[in-house]
Image (cartoon, rainbow, N blue to C red; front, side):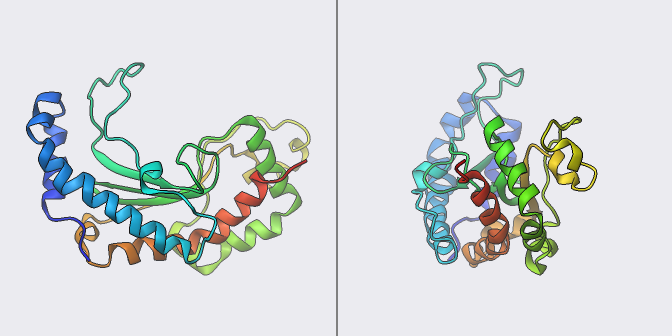
Amino acid sequence: MAYFTEDFIKFFEELEKNNHKEWFDENRKRYEREIKEPFKSFVGELILAIQKFDPEIMIKPKDAIFRINRDIRFSKNKQPYKNNVAAFISRISKKEEFPGYYVHFDAEGIWLGGGLYDLSTENIYKVRQEILYNEGNLKEALNAKGFKKEFGALQGKKNKILKAPFKEYGKEIPILYQKQFYFMKQYPPSKITSEELVEFCADKFEKAYPVNKFLRLAIENIE
């Protein structure tokens, strides 16, 4: 089933040139018809597809989808709207610190990713601790043929200095320096109008499931 028409791309190309309330109000019905409602339906079906290999995912579409309105209160960029639609399919909420699956559509294409992006100091410590204790399990997940070919490796910002108890292991295990643990890849915009869009995204995410599973074990570790 195709959720989106060619007008999806056109809408975001036009929004990029007309990112103001007047234009958006004139095109609001178009946005709801071509973008908002189809994306909600798509996310709902994608959640069902993900649940087949990741039963911990219990989120509802409304709790996964990000608003198109930008928070401009503390930003130098005062454009009121995002040039994309996106969702984070996690356990129960896009706001929780729990490894999930990120899907993002814009005029340039599809972004698929996941893992852990914004982490509290406590959870960074937990992930590093799990890596230190069970590095072999992480290597196995990262080197699995599906993940490595599709996403390569975990990305993220790093600390310049490691504190105890990780400091002495940093040279041997460089990933300990990371304070983000996410994966991401871009795909061409032609995929957005594909009739196999759900299957395409779910297949990519299934390859990342072992990595997410490792990160969850870290976050859920109760000392």
